[in-house]
Length: 434
Image (cartoon, rainbow, N blue to C red):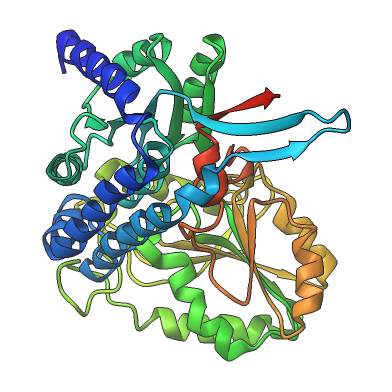
């Protein structure tokens, strides 16, 4: 985009936000509910577009699109309650009222792996809180971004949410512009560090949702049938390209053989191929460079001593497909131990105790999500408090939900999206004493 187009976008957002913030929450909700209806009405077209652009299966694209409408419905129904003023009487008799007010124009920088959901889950609470958002989508899913922007336009939100195909240099300039009051990014650690440092230099709020290396902890007393019902989807959702996918499977020695045998048997049933076909379980990675990186990570880990326990087929250099793979005997000095593997590669570890499982789970720079599988849910909840992550699921796969806060700690980022907290992230608090 030209500098003039970026400037016009900033001017439009800044002017529109001054009017938007004064609209009743009910009026904002009406537009957002219209958006939800349009998403539902156009879900098949949107889903096919996502599959074509980034390779996820059509089944998963449909789920992503329909999930977007639930976020719209949640904030339309709950924002009035979330932003309602609170008043208390101080000990000196004064009444103290606390208000939530919008920050202004928020810049959102989003990835390609969930080209609709990543934008919706961030933009909807931002605009329902009275802000405007400028969306910078991933360059390899432009048609998804354009299609979503068209739906915003149809709801009369064309000035409230605007999409820009900006360069990294233009993004940096926008963060420094006085009309941008805050920014949010979902993406890599490198991108997060760049955005956070730029925002901090200009003393602006930022929220980061970065990578993950989520542990999938199977204790000795786990319901193995339930575990196996969820083990594959936990890792291979979105072709393995999900920040909250389980990356490290930490299994108690008492059940490691059963788990490994059953896992291999289930993985052998996976169909890798055309993501538009209904029988396909795993499609291609989104870009060839992503496959090249994953291949390098696996190769380097093997050289460091890791072993392949299962691989669906021999990888090649001709396409973007990567075989579902299990890595075992992973040494601490290997890439597979320390880095996020963004693709259909599962790292498998065995442990002798729950304490060892927790220690291994926490031995990472990431802290996004985790899951614990055990019949003793009270004990599992106790263990959950010891895991260093933003969310822990007991006997369920890690997932996001518009009604609850989502985010990580450590190098997985800071701040929260969704839930009440996600809306409040981009509000300022004002206290009035009477």
